Image 1 (cartoon, rainbow, N blue to C red):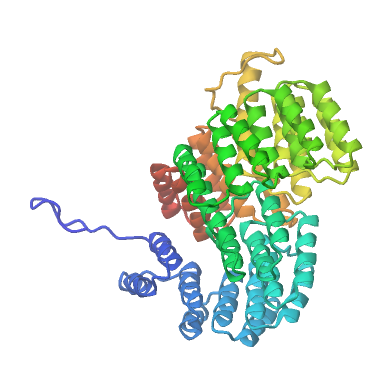
Image 2: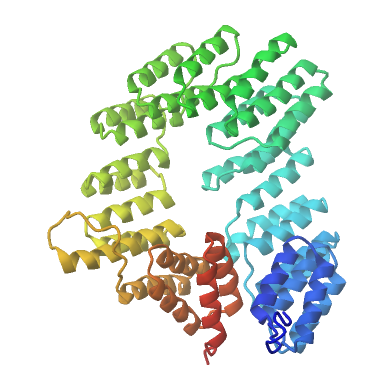
Length: 585
């Protein structure tokens, strides 16, 4: 920035390396390689020595383009600077070789990582597995997949989806379905892409009933079909000459999209025009409209549509049932919801675990514990296995009522039935204990959560920090159990913050936390959210004192944490702290 005023002395603003690195990362995300080179040259012109993060970002940018030659130039610069390549360096190189279809070179990089003292991670495996699949070497990909546990790596949804996609494309559909089932059994929930790959494969095999069933299952899990999902159905029907069905799915996509964007009246006008065009609405169109009206709390319109769906002999499934059940429950029409469930069973529509869980959740919101337990017992008697969402509804209700013994019994029952608590289950229980003034018990649950391999979220840390703040205020102002606490109190003992940080540090050292930097980010952001500005700064300084790589802290904490929350001034404060703080010896 040059002179802004003729009378002022020249003032030049000089960017720091951290600012340059953030700029490089942003450019890399959009594959703006030429602009990245300009920024890199500017770094050198400013006589700022690039660090490992700088080099890694340049390498990653080139590798995304498959330009390994230029990436290797920056790899040599890492060595010339006396730095050591890390997991990000090697993982980018694996990606680069795979992008240029040279999986043998990618595999050599993968093999050399442990020899260089660099631990492979899930991304390293997934990049190479994807490379093998793209090269048609699916058996090698499957073998590599089976070895992930040796490096204490767990397949992600992307790992599974890459393999399922490759198997489907190689006419190995049975293996793909087997992997899909394994994925769910291991608690890795399929995403829209996973389902779309399978739906597309089924449509290509003319198995439209199975494709519809998969679409229903996907929707019941709350996943919204994408344009690609609808296109798979439309393409499949068109290739079979089933033009009317293809038109149905085209309008399904349009009407569904309008309803999701709250434009229900427009969707209904389009729906009404179908009859004039000789197109019969399918169950997807009806369900989208029913859901739209339920969200607008126009239950009568939704029920009329259901009756019309039945009269038109459309396929009535549990997805449609669950949408209307949820609408009735949200409108507190429990008697009608129960009647609907009973009538649908008579009509041959088989409820799902989700159907019963919707009823149970609403009953528990009204603290009708006996009724909820009755429905729970009924679903078990009918052969349905309650899932983690069903049990968590009980946990929420019991904790809200301060019935911690009953909440503990629910957790015990879950484990007995082989249902693993998830992030929500643990956080609800942590909150319940903390609200009851049992902070130590809350930390015990936090420890169990991490030991079980369940990563705490931003909300989990916020809950702990909030209750530590309230506990301190409560001890100072009132010893009465259950006294109403002042929601504006923000003081928190820094020793309590250290307690959380020590938990995270110990778990990270034990390998129990796979993403310790993410945990630290959530902790510091939680302090900011609670208004504990000075404590947040102190916690940040402690991170630097522990020797965490500054640039990784910047990326995770400053950008992912503070900037995304709009806390620009707070972000600047922490950058200033980093600028003036000497690195640890």
